[in-house]
Image (tube, rainbow, N blue to C red; front, side, top):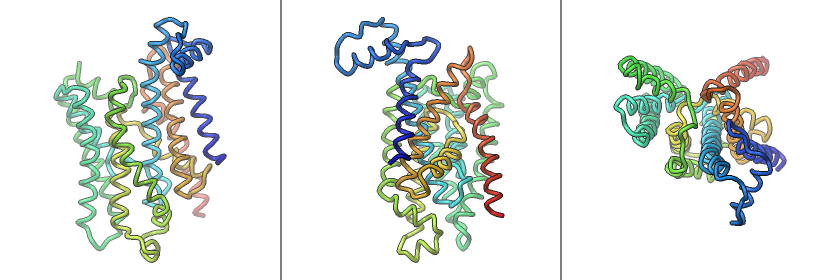
Length: 332
C-alpha cells in the first residue's frame, strides 16, 4: 500500500501546485477559497479572473496531463511485460508515428481540431494493425521478434511519410503547426476533448485490469505460459489492442510525448515490484504525476512555453542511458 500511497500523495500535491502556479499566480488563500466554493456552493470571495484561470484554463490542462500520463504509463507497462523487455516503449509498434502521420495529414488539409485528433487516433490504430498483420503473415518465427522488427520498419516508413508532408506543407502556416504538434503540448486541450478520449482510455484499461494476473504469466514466455494453460496468441492480441487504444487516444490530443511509456514503468517496477496488479496502478500514478510536473515546468520555466516533448527528452534520455548501463551490469 505504501508503494501506491506515496505516488498518490505526490500527485495530489502536484495537482494543487499546478493550479496555483503559472503566468497568473494564484495565492494559496485564493486557491483554497475557490476549491471550497466549488465543494460547498458558497461564494468564493475572489475575483472572477482567478476563478476563470483555475477552472477554465488550468483545470482542463491538469486533467489532460493526468489522463495522458497515466495512459502512456499503463501502455508502456503492458508493452514491457508483453515483450519481456524493460527497454520497450509504446512507440515500438509504430503507434506514435501512425498518430503523427494522421495528425500531419489533417493539418495539411486544414481540418478542424476534431478532425486532426480523429485522424491521429485512426493513424495510431492503423499503424499497429498493419504491424500485427505483417507479423501474423510471417509464421514459423519468433512472434515477438517479428513484431518488434515490423514495428521498427513501419515506424521508419511512417516517419518518412511525415517528412514528405512537411516538405509539401505551407512553410508559413501549416509547417509551424505540424512542427508544434509533433513536439507535444497540452496547451489547447479542452474538457470536451478529454470527454471524447476518456472512453477509449477506459476501454483499454479494463482488460488490463481484469486480466492482470495473466500478464504475469505472459512475462514468463510463450512456452511457459502455454504450459500453464494460457492462450498466448489471443492474449497478445488483446493486450496489444488495449495498450494501442490507450496510446492512440492519448497521443491524439497531446501530440507525441516520448519517454513516459519507457521510464515510468521501470520506475514503478523499482517501487512496486514486477507483479502486474501492483505495477499497473503504481505506473499510472507515477505517469500522471510526472507529466503534470513536466507540464507545469514547461509553462512556468520561461517567458515562452517549452513543448513538453523537449523536456521529456531532456529528462528521459539520461535516465535511458543509466538504464542501459545498469542493465549491462546485470547481464554480466
